[in-house]
Length: 394
Image (cartoon, one colour):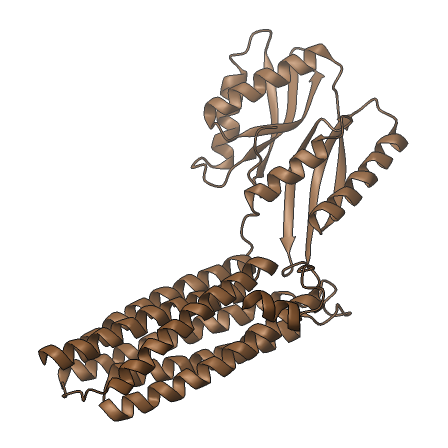
């Protein structure tokens, strides 16, 4: 069914990085969500009126809020597809994340309102009427919501959309909620127990948990999360596949919305290489990164000594001693200069954020260990970088 809808209503469906194609996916998801949730809300509201069940009525309003969420998603994809302008040179792609966040907030509000209604039902329990029509409506709702969850998860996978993933999560929470309501209805019918309010609390807990997860998924890219490790590894392998580049560091990836990103990195090259030749290689690497990862790339060249045996040997020793401080610490841009009675070791140290040591403590530890190296004395001139992306061993 999903494949048929995609092929029928989405032109150029395989190009999920194109903002226009993403807008069409959002339009399809939004319209399907609005129509189905309005139907489910009307059916459950009827069932709630017939039975007097607070859980069923709350579930009906839950579906009504889902329809509203679909409208938000639809509007979000439409606005995210707007082209870049003078005020927003990187486009409007982050609006898609914001629409997902609005959906998550709506889920949380529904959960809180359901907690309030359920507590009132627990404090003042009332008998709930039984209706097989209500049972049929609830069963149909569960099946429809299962399909909607699979539908939006498939669309999210095709274009990498956090907003659609949030919608899929919402549908799954609805399946759990409606299943609990159905169980409550059947238990009340065959045992006479008044558990309607307690089931409402259980439903609210599932809804709140789903809303929190959806909010986190959309907040992370807005706040600037670490890049996907597989992307970092792919970038590193691509850059280092060029033998003229001996190492990379300071990789930063800026996310301006799905399909709209920019990366910058430093590439280490031999200091005695022809600068025009290396510049041409760097240009080619930037184009290759753009073609492979669909992102603008800016590369800064760092010339280093690669053919000096003494420098290479000392670089290896220093790299080893900083790993003794923390296995995740790395160095780059290593140089040696001679003083009147000592050698200066000048380099940058990349320290992961999870390292408990302060910058000054790292510098002090490096200086102490460098003082123990043979052939000294050695003075260390260290600049501390914090790791924007965790680089795997090349």
